[in-house]
Amino acid sequence: MHSRREFLKRASAAGVGALTVSAITPSLSPLAAGESRSVVIGSGNGLAAVAKAMEMIRDGADALDAVVAGVNIVEDDPNDMTVGYGGFPNEDGVVELDAAVMHGPTHRAGAVASLRNIKNPSKVAKVVMERSDHVLLVGEGALRFARVHGFKEEDLLTDKARAEWLKWKENLSTHDDWLPAHTPETKDIGSVYEAYVRSTGTIHCSARDLKGNISCVTTTSGLAYKIPGRVGDSPIIGAGLYCDNEVGSAGSTGRGEANLVNCSSVMIVEFMRQGKTPEQACLDACKRIVDHNVMRRLKKDDGRPDFNVSFYAMNKRGELGSAALYSGAMFTFHDGATAQRKECAYLFKR
Ligand code: ASP
Image 1 (cartoon, protein in one colour):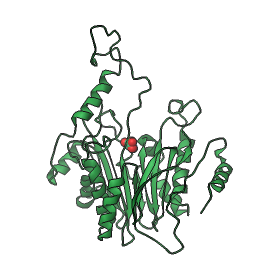
Image 2 (spheres, helix red, strand yellow):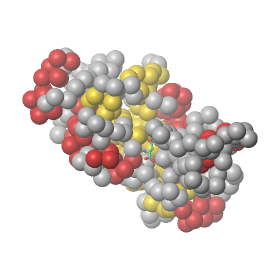
Image 3 (cartoon, rainbow, N blue to C red):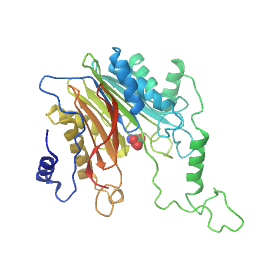
Image 4 (cartoon, helix red, strand yellow):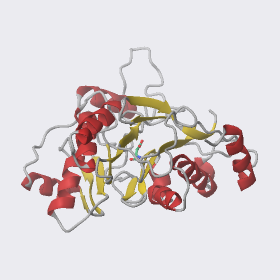
């Protein structure tokens, strides 16, 4: 096992310089040579998903069926406002969902973006993979495809998400016509959201099944209050997820634009192909994002990114790793014994 000190040494030798670099080795011990295992890894909100996926894998399910069933739990849950039903809407108050799946053994993928009215976009993405010659369908075309395959349409905007969206809209500016609740004495109505951070969130899940096959899924309602039609990294193969059955799998949550311009998930799989551990591969993708982040508006005063991105990876043998730009991010996994939630390794301490 590499010690934390050894990692710090290697990191500064690689030119990270004054940046604070930390690594937390997940409790999963590395495997002995020749050993492998079935595992599931997910984003911080994936505890129920990894448990469900492992239950199905134990019963002999294909890794893709298992991870899709896992994330469906979160898509159906109105209390997770970053995925599926009850997700944060776009700036017009309409929920638009993005999702993608990738199947390791056949190296196929399917995805949908800006899909309205269907609460399980990951299921639609899987049907795109299985029942069309395409990889990505968007907007109206994706909805029509879902309809003909029997998916039911429903209003995905819950009262709770609508209330949050209204609050955002009414407080955006003191100079527009949308007013939050106020009294006859209120003067500046609609205080500008000074340091307002729009919520992000997504679920990613990767698994290795009993046959040693690897698959993954990422599903999201995307950036809260996005411009209608905005598509993040989640449904983009290579950015929000990627797997190679002979190497491993990776996925991400966080600022999608950073993954779109860095092709982060395929980068992590390629780092693992070069022999890096999943955690090291995730940390190196974080460093690449930092190196490429040159726009001042996306930097804090100390020069570091003013956003976070988290990565989740597993290799062919079932070793896991996760890392984020900033401390405090969480990942989930099931190692065959229990479903657990742990802090991701990170580059910078908050
Ligand atoms: N990556 C997602 C997106 O950019 C959002 C997130 O994971 O927070 O749409």
